[in-house]
Image (cartoon, rainbow, N blue to C red):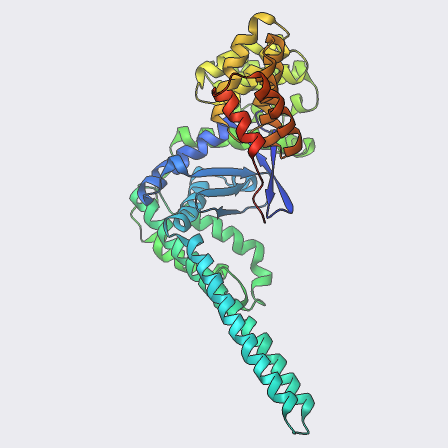
Length: 446
């Protein structure tokens, strides 16, 4: 079962490396609220733009596919204020609004042409050297090789120069978006100051023409002029946003950090809500259920309407093998956050795991919603397969198993299950048509 925070979808990147994606309703909702005014100012469609969290402690973010901002959890964990994260989002939105990814592909194409020309010229020089009667054959050959590598080097430097210009353009755009929303650029400036602090000793020896980003000191100087000239430079984050930012960070540290690190960051004498949140999560992680529940209950006494505290209580019980007890807190979480496919999927899982035949219809309803909302997650389909099988609907059980396998990348199992499912499902129904789609699917050629 995918947990609220650490259910990781393994995403293929260029067919080789794998990155761990973290899904969590509380943090994703916070990031959407951070991004919404920035997207509006930039003219970016928020409904078509996702912020994806990567399980990586380094401070980094980037844009891919033109409409997805990938953000390492290190950004949230290291950012002291919401404004720092908002500054990162504003910068990446600058890349999206500027169409930089599409233009980068064109620049890469141009660079390949430059490199190809260099190779042709170099090859011509080699032919000339081979046919020359000069006694300086070695020097002639060296010069030809230099021409060939020179073409590629010119292309590479041209591409890097383009990337540096786009980074600077994204910085300027970010300041405009922040100004338009009445927010400070101080957080973005602090982010680049952090980069400068970590790279200060190496940047002095870097050739500025060999890197894809402006030098940190140069970037800071430019940003200082832009940011400090803004009338919003002194603007502060709202108390409510600051409080939720602290909770999101505590949640990440609670689930991700080593236990000794959690204890240092949130010692027992710290009785703040974020500290107790992190310690309750750490207790759950280490199997101390009663301690975790006591901590969660203390949070709920202060914030009884917080859906994510109810979610954590349900998760702790479910993952400790107490599915029946997990149902009610997860119902409360789902009622408080009805649009969350992740929470409703966990509720559906708990209903199936409770073993109650009376709960199967509710489980199917919740899991179907989760599957529709979270189209890339296999877990809702897997639990739907169990629920349908217990209801005696074998065709839908096999279809659900096929969809889970398909999303996991197991095409053989997916097509086997889909073939069985379409033999049982009425023709031309949505289920039968979906089974046909899976059976007839052919992977794109690389």
